[in-house]
Length: 544
Figure 1 (spheres, rainbow, N blue to C red):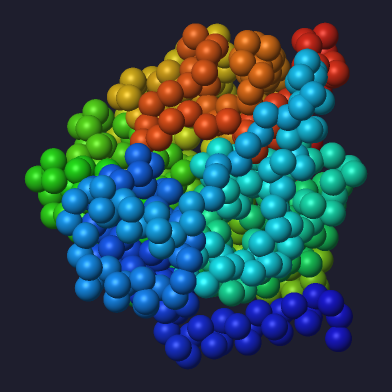
Figure 2: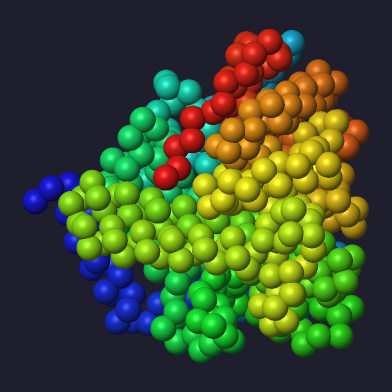
């Protein structure tokens, strides 16, 4: 039996077991051994989160119990410490709080490229076993974390991080792909991150693109190797498609009145997030909508990776009007188009023509829907569609470039996207996330490494090399300037002023996995050791 067939058989057994027991990760139910802290520790956790005994609630979610959770809960119920000080003391006595990732790499005065090289070992982790009662999920192989407060692997971050891993780190790249494949086999999908409190949602499906990096000259070969996991991920996003009635959603699937099927972001739970418990309570309290729906929409936005952005708000301003689950987004659907194309290509290599035809047809149908329903002629960009009202939202955001990145756009529309990008999104330091400043981190004036990479590669794919080069140069210049000033690489940047970014729920983090990876990759496109602009070579597209 071939290696490929063995993998397929093992995965089939895993999925069969999930089907027989009822897959818990779609419905929001959680098995006891992967219960999030808010479930495992009950009132203790929610009381500590509400009291904000630590400024960043993620500190509580990541804390490691010093003894059996049941004993801690029993003692808490018996003692019921009432004051904030007593509650903090009880928590700190019973839990270990690990420090954030430190990423200031000695020695000083390194070039940007050498500094990033020195960061990789500091950001690499191995967690083959999780401590009892911890929210951490064990993974079989080493992986790279973003940095700062983010001490676990994250889904879509990792693709962009992997772009910066050199030939001598091919083993680490393969290990990260294997970790994600393991999570698909174990949980039925890739969680947002490797924590129990992330299991009810995923993130943008970049796994097929990570796999393609293992064989950039022949990505279909790698897709064939991981075909069982790619199909399983597609099954996760399309779960309950058969149950979706026209004009109604079913989990992450929305079937429109004419029978067209597209996808939305969703989360299996409708309670406050463990890592942002108090913040979510405050948002729901300020909203006129049912609290459970507000929580679901907040969580769905977290699944999108754009947590948070004006594109999810009914009024375009306030988080209290969030309605993420009403939106059919071009980013998610473009990635699922790419996944379907990748599966089809992998099936060809695996000598399964029926599979190749099936998934190619799915991709063709999705591409037609993207170009018909998610195209906004008024903005010249692909746009978010409110499936309930049938109205395009008029958002001018970098999400409108995703169909170029995955090849879903038609040529005429791609040219319009490029024009709109020049006019509305191109700023001093790169591509801005949106044109609206709400104070949320996925809005103006911030730009993010993933959006720069997707813009550059997407524009190159449709032959707008000049704009692609301009974006790459502006981004690398911004990162270089801030590094020279601060000695750090940051999670996000204010690209309108080419300075460190801000906004959102937590302080600006440094490290930073995806910034490191994208910056190195774009420096390589500029054909200069430290990212100068003497030349430019479009990056190789490893997608289908």
